[in-house]
Structure formats: structure tokens, C-alpha cells
Image (tube, rainbow, N blue to C red; front, side, top):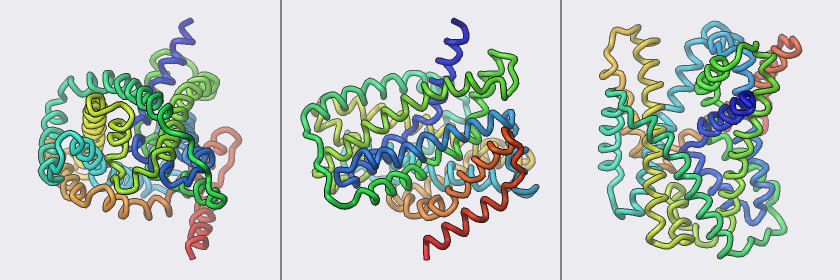
Length: 379
């Protein structure tokens, strides 16, 4: 019984790790752009948005959570530069700023015409206060928000799918829908998150068992079925909702789509509950990301010469400036970077798994081939 509870708790921890604010946006976009090919579109985002991140957890399990050892396979400089670039994209230059814009989109459904810069300024001040104080409200929100969001999504799915007919697929566009699903899965950046957040899952396993990494594989695989299964179901439902409501989502910004569908499916009284849950989820995610980047600035760059207030303030000033680009502006900046680098990261992850399980030594050559192939595809 204890092993079953450990598998269940680990699976739920994996799910919570990847169930963030951005994950509520991109599946809807995939569905909206699928032209009725929601099954192929879902398959695309499940490959890069679910399977690949769980491979990231697996590779960190095989490396016993030693990030430096994993990054060092690219060369000694990568031990510093890889985390810096990755945390920058997940932090103030990317996901952190994006969280603020998604929260703003939900907030505008409650109080329309709220200026983004005002909302962003207040949000950054709130994030600074909650992070610097290490307020206990953050883990409390995290434990409460996941059930609230799940119940909200279930209500939206039941009512939304009941009231709207299944979309009719166009004769053409199936490959484009699949490809778009893959590319939008990149935008979640969950593979990068897996490299850093998986340490919490590994600590959870180590506290409950004395098994080595290889002996923990069966337990990891069973836990992954739970976490990946839940995430896959939610992604598929969101893709389907995006596809079904595509005719009325044409002029709706991506960050407002879930709230808009909630209002259509549940009515004006119930939709605010979903919007508030999304706002709080975004702020909670932003706090974690701000803390990660701030700690890196303090420990690795300033060598603890700068106080936390300075590094955190610097992080949030950057995030504020980037957030004013709006969701579409941030994605225009991030998307080309991820489209170019993500295949190489996937190859690096798979090559490292082969290295640990079957002794494959090559890592730079497969990555170079992946980069070259991507360059040739872009020409």
C-alpha cells in the first residue's frame, strides 16, 4: 500500500510541476488553429508538451538530480551558460513576463480596459513582496489552486462540449495541424522546467525509498503514467474546446480564450471563478520563476555579494519591461528561439538517456546534426 501511495503522490507531483498558467493557453491555440483536425493537433502537442518533459524528468533521475553533471556533457562552460540562458527564458525574459500577461488577460474579463502596464506594475510589486517574505500563502495557493482549476476545467468541458457540436475537419491541413501542435508544445518550455523542477520530485522519491536511480525506474514509469495521463487528458480537452469554439475565438487574444470559453459555457456568474483561479495560478507560477532567476543572479553571478532584494528587484524590473510587449510580442520574441533550439534539447535529452542506460558516449554530434537539420529546414 505504501508503494502505491508513493506512486500516486509522485505522479500528482509531476502533474502539478507541469500544470502551469501557460499550459492553459497553448492547447487552446492548437485547437483554434487545427481546422477541425483536433486529433492530429492533440497528438502533436502531446508529443512535445507531455512526452518530452517527462523524458526530461527521466534523464535527471538517471543523473541522480546532478544538473552540473548533465550540463557538463556539452562542455564545462555549459555548466554556467546553459542554466543562465534557460532560467532567463523561463524567468523575466519569457515565461515570468508571460504569466503576467496571461493574468492580465483573465483580469480584463473581470474589469475590462485595465491597462497592462498598471496591472504589470502591481503584479510585480505583489510578486516581490510574496517572494522576499517567503510568505506561506504561496504553497497554500499551490495546493488549493490545482483542485480549483481541475474542477473549473471539468465544468467548462462538460458544459462546453455539451452545447457545441464537434468540428468538421477540412480536407486539407492535417499535417499543418500536427506540426502546429508540435511547435506550440515547444512554447510551454516544460522540458527546460523539467531540468530544474525535477529535483523536487527526485527528493520526494529519495525521502521515501533507498533505491538507486535504476531501481527506481519502474516506480518512476508508473508515476509518470499518472502525471502524464492527467496532463494528456487536460491538453486533449483544451485542444477540443479550442477547435469547437474556433469560429468565435477569432478576435480573442490567446490569454483571454479560457475565460471567454468559460463565460460561453458556464455563464457570466461562474466564469469569474475560473478567471480568479487563472490569475492566482499565474502569480504563483511567477513567484517560483522569479525566485529561481533571482537566486541564480545572487549565487552564480554576484557570488552572494548582492542582497536578495536587489537581485529580485532586478528580475522583476526586467519582467515588467518585457511584459509590456504583451503576450503576442513575447511569443514573437521567444518562438523563433525555441523553434531553433528545442529539437537540439530533445536530442540532448534522448542521447543522455541512452548514455546512462546503454553507454552511448556521443552527445555533441547528434545535437550538431539536429541543429544542422533545423537550419536546412529553415532555408
